[in-house]
Amino acid sequence: MALAPAQPPSAAHSRAVPADPAVPSATTLNDIVALDALALSDAIRTRRVSCREVMQAYLTHIARYNPAVNAIVALRDAEVLLAQADARDRQLADGQYLGWMHGMPHAVKDLAACAGFPTRKGSPLTSSAPDTQDSIGVARIRAAGAIFIGKTNVSEFGLGSHSYNPVFGTTRNAYDTTRTAGGSSGGAGSALALRMLPVADGSDMMGSLRNPAAFGNVYGFRPSQGRVPYGPAPEIFVQQLSTEGPMGRTVADVAQLLDTQSGYDARSPLSLARGAVPFASALQRDVKGVKLGWLGDYGGHLPMEAGVMSLCEASLRDFTAMGCEVEPCAPDFAPDRLWRTWLTMRHWLVNGALGAMYADPSRRDQLKPEAQWEVAGGDALSAADVFHASVDRSEWYRSLARLFERYDFLLLPSAQVFPFDAQMHWPSSVAGKPMDTYHRWMEVVIGPTLAGLPAVSVPVGFDARGLPMGLQIIGPAQADLAVLQLAHAHEQQTQWVRRRLPPLLTGTVRT
Image 1 (cartoon, one colour):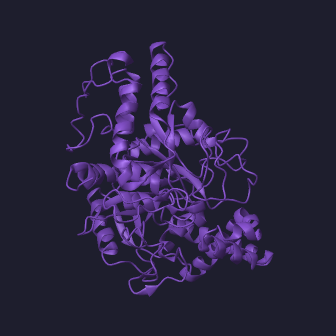
Image 2 (cartoon, helix red, strand yellow; image 1 turned 180 degrees about the vertical axis):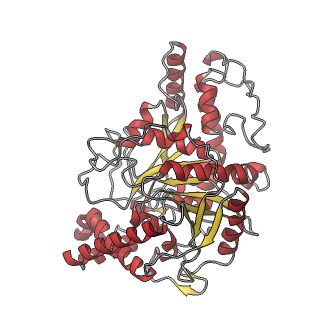
Image 3 (cartoon, one colour; image 1 turned 90 degrees about the horizontal axis):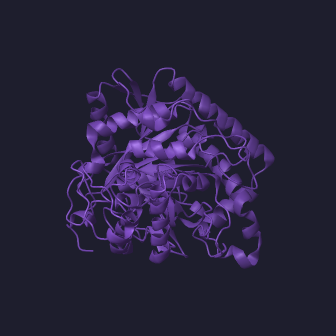
């Protein structure tokens, strides 16, 4: 891409940037926001485009499209952000380059602390006062040069795979604004799909990086447990179901953000040290002969909306075209036992996080019913219940380890339903089967979570209504790079993100 050197900020406010020929044309897509994150990073570093130009382009784009989806919340004033962009330009002029995110706009998921912004977690029970320190992951993104423009919307306290809450409202799907963007990283997924952010951070307990990625035709990567340190936090040993991680429109962008987020921190004693090779520099791999186990719907245990399985099964041909060997498989572990394990572990952890609020009658009624149900479930547990669930969780890990003796990776749908009506709190039934909890319709994602395994949701296409779906690629423990390599090869084979822009961006719907 031939970009002219950037003009001084005072003279460059409206200069056009030549389009990247690799990006599909869209009648409303600005050339700067059309760039993937690494391409944008390079354009800033080489001063082919100024940080002010980038910020101005993104703010204009956000003003146009965010009202349709409500993905970015707590947006900072434009004057403040443009002043920060000017400061980044002066740093570049002085030879000071902070890192690959230098001058790039970024919005933090509203479950993570970011100095200067309140962390509302979608709840009126949280403080509206700005945080005074960053979380570990946010501090690393700041150190890489990012400019924080706001937060991305979430489900209340991150509970449920649908991003609605009483503080900021509902986030809608980039491909159909009448439908959900998923959650709890729904704001991140919708913002990415509509090119309102170059990359996005998120977190995942029950598919909260994978489900919004599937619903937004982007990539969401749940790293191995400990890969991305969490904190600072009061409790640093027990909370092991949730992990932070990256989202992006390309696997290379995801890998680059993971390089920024990952690595040991003494405040998080179970965090992992960085490997010798950065993830983003080692994505190329010959996948011919790689053995893939297709878990499907766990032998009929998981109800699936019509079209989900057929779309995911059709995508298996993409893997065989890449030279991979795919065959059906099943773990030697009862799915009902897995679900019971999940309920116990989740009740216990949510109870620990929200129990004090639930115990206060003046605050209990401000918790959504699903949160109250989780805490009450935790109150009913005994110490023996939690211990036996941990034993079952351990056996589940060993069951998958036995599968990995035969297969290099496992494949599983990223969701059991397509994006549903945004006015619904959650699907009450799937394929005619009643859902007995608010999250049973996302049972498909709990396996990698309980085993602490790396899993990425990759796009696999759309149904007849134009609604997107994704597929999980699951790897053995700490095989994060290998998972990203297979995802990268699949991206080169399919190119779903580039092939299918959201209708808002192509001008096929009215904004």
